[in-house]
Image (cartoon, rainbow over all chains, first blue to last red; front, side, top):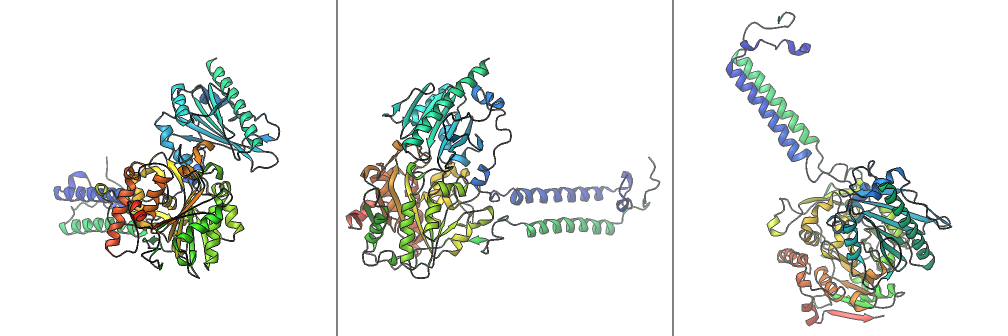
Length: 224
Length: 370
C-alpha cells in the first residue's frame, strides 16, 4: 500500500506511456549517478580522515586475541592475564595492555612497522611495568607474535648487535644497556627499562626472565 | 488486485504534466546534491574551534630573515654530553657570529619550535629530540626577544605520553614556553597544490591536514630534529621532521615516502634548522631500543649540534658525516633540491644545495668545539 500522499500518482502499469517510462527511468538513473558521484568524490574523500595516529593508539582492539594465527602463546593468552606478574619487589604489572594487529601496528611504531610486517608479524602486545614508588620508572615490554619461530628468529637476529652480551633467557637472548631482547618460540620480546640505570636494568632482566617462563608455560598449555 | 481505495486518475498524464513532474524530480535531485555540497566540510571538525582559517598555504618563514649571502650555511658544534646548551649556542653563533639567534628571531616574534617527539621513548634511546637541545633553543629564542615560544609536534603515539617520556614536556614547562598538545580539532588543510599531485614528478601532496594553530600563529619556525636511521627512508633528519606536523592517515604515504618528504621540504621553509646529534641512532630506526643503536655524534664520536639555514644541505652533511652513508643515494634529497630550486627560480628566498661539499669548498661550513 502506498503512503497516502503518493496514492494520487498511482496508476496501473498499462496506463504509463512508453515516453513516460523512458523519461522516468532516465531521471532515476541520473539521480543515482549524481549520488554515486557525490559519494565517490566527496563522502569518500581521501583527505577526510583527520584523526591522529595517537588517537588510534588509544583504542585497544576489542577482539585483539581473535584470529591471531598459529602462535600458541598468543592463543593461550586468551585464558590468562595479559602479562605475568613481574616477580620483582617494588614493581607492579602493567595497568593497561595495548594490542596491535598488522593493520594498526603503525600507530605504535610508524616507520619501523614494515620491518616486522615483512617478517610475518601477527600481533604486538605492549605493556609497561612500573615502580610502585615512582610510576615514572618503567620497564616496557614489546611482545611481537611473529606467528612462527623462524620469523621470530629472523627479526631477533636482524636487530641484534654483533657484540651483545648473551643471556640465558628464552630460546636465545641478549642484553644491552640494561635492556633485554629474547626469542621464545614464535615470540620476539623486547624488555626496555625507562632509564639505563642499574636498578631498572636489574628489574628489566628479572621481568624478562619471568616473561620468558610465562611464554614457555603458555606454549606448554597450548600443546596440551 | 483492485485499485479501489486509491486515488487513481483514470486519465493518462498529459505531456505537459509529465514534463512538469520530470522537471520537478530533476530539480529536487539537483537541490539535494547542491545542498550536500554546500553542507560538506572538507576538513571535518578541524578548523572549527581553532580560531584559524580552515586552510593554510605554505609560508616562507625564512623570507624575512636578513641573512648575508656570504654567511656560513652549516655550523657544527661538538662537545661533551653535559654541554648540550653550549653546543646549541655555539652552533647558532657559527651561522651569525655577531648576532647569534637575533639574526633569525626578532623582538615580538612568535616562534614555533618543532622537535621530533614521535615516540613514547626516553631520551637516552635517541628516538626523540633531546630535551636539553630544545631547552637551549627556547632560551636563545627568548633572549632574542621572542614574544612567545611554542613547542609542537603530532606524535605517532599518545601526545601527552610522548611529551612526558621524552622529557620535552618538562623542559617546555620549566622554560616558560608553550606546549601545544594536538587534538583532533587542531588540524586544518594545508594546500600545497591546487591540482592533483603528479606521481611521475615525485609529488605526493595536494591538500592534507596539518597542525593548524601553531603554524598559523608562528612568525618563525625552527626545526629541531634528531638524526636517526630509518627503516623506510634510510634516515630521519631535518626534512623528515616536518612529517610530524601532518595529521590524518599519514602511514598511507609509506609507499611514496621520498616523494612525501621532498614535498614537506617544499611546503615547510623554516627560519632555521638544528640537527640534534647528541646521540645519533645508527641502526634499527626510527624506534631503536638499544643503547647500542645510538652513538654520541654518530661517526664524529662526540656529541654534536648542527645548525643550518639550508635543510637540504644540512641533511646531506649529516647523512654522510654522522650516519656514514652516501647522500647521492638518498632519493628525497634529490627531489627536494629540485622542487625547491623551482621555487627559488620563481623568487623564493631559500637555500637547497644538494651537495654539501659545495658549501665546504666555499668556506660556508664552520665548526667549533665547546
